[in-house]
Amino acid sequence: MSFQVIKLSPQQKENLRLRTSREGEAFSFRTSPKDASMIASIGISQEIGTQNDELARFLYDGHTGTLIPKKSLRSELIQFKDLIGVRIWALEVEHLEIRFPNVRGFFHPGLAGKPKEDLKQLILFPEIVAKYLETENIEAMIVRSWANNTVFGGYTSSQPYYFTNIWELANLDALRYSDLVSRRQIPFLGTHDLVAHIAGTQSSDWDEVSVYGNELKQHLSHYFRDAKNPSMSALILPYMAGIMLDDLAQPPCYGALTRRHVLAEIIKKIDPDVISPRESRTQFRFPESYEKIIQLARFSDEKTVLQQTRPLIDQLVEEIYAGSFRN
Image (cartoon, one colour):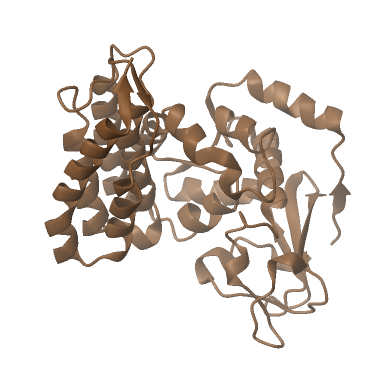
C-alpha cells in the first residue's frame, strides 16, 4: 500500500478557508468529512515537533527506549485512496514506540511499517478517528472560529497555544465550548484534542460530562443574556469555568471530584451581583489567584480543594476589582 504526499498551495488553503467560512460556526466530520479531515490534518501536522505538540511526550525510540526530541519529529499531509491524513516520523529513528495505548490504535499499522509492533512512521486519518467517536455516540467537530485562529492564521511554532488564552477569554469560548460538550461534541483540530480528549473516550462517561456542559451553558447564557459587550473583568470567571469543563471532558479526569468542586464554586460566583457583565470596566492587571485556583484543582488532594477553593475564588474576585476600574 502507498500514499500520496499532499502539498497545499496558499491558494488551496485559502479556498479551504473560504469553504469553511460558509459552514456554521461548528460543523461535523459527518457532514463535511473531507474538508474537516484536511483541517484536522493541517492542525496536527503544523504542531508536530513544536512546543504545542501534545503527542510528542509519548513518542519513544523503540531501540534505545529514550524519548524522541521534538526537534527530530517531522510531519506531512498525505492522501490514501479517499482518506486525507498526516504522516509523522522522526529523523534517524527506525522504530517508533507509542507509550500511550489509548492513542496507539488510531494510527494505521498497514501504512506505518511491516508488523504493528515495528512502526517506522505514524499514519493518522482524522476521518477514521471521527468514525470511532460515532461508535461512542460522540461527534467530532470543526469549530470555524478556532480553525481561523489556528489552522488558517495566528499560528507560530514558537508561541504556546497560538496566543489563544487571551483570545479565548475575550471571545467567550467557555460558552461555545460548553454548548459543544452539552451536545456530546468534541472539537478535533490538533494534537491536544486527539491526546487529551479523544483517546480513551467512552460513551458512558459522556453521559455525565454532557450534564456538566449543559449546566455551564445554561448558566452562562443567563448571565450574559443582556450583555452586548461584556468587559474582561466579567469574562475571567467564565473562562476559568471553561477550563475546568475542558479538564472534566478528558478521560483521565472524568468525574474528578476536585474539578467538579472547583467548577461548582466558580459557577456560584458567576453572578451579576458579584461582577456585572453589563458594567463597563477596564482590566489593567490579571488576577494572580487565577493560576493558583487552576493548580489547586489539578494537583491538590480532595480535602485541600474542599477547604481552599471558596476562599481563593473570593480572593480572585477581590483581585479582579483591585486590578480594574469602572469606565
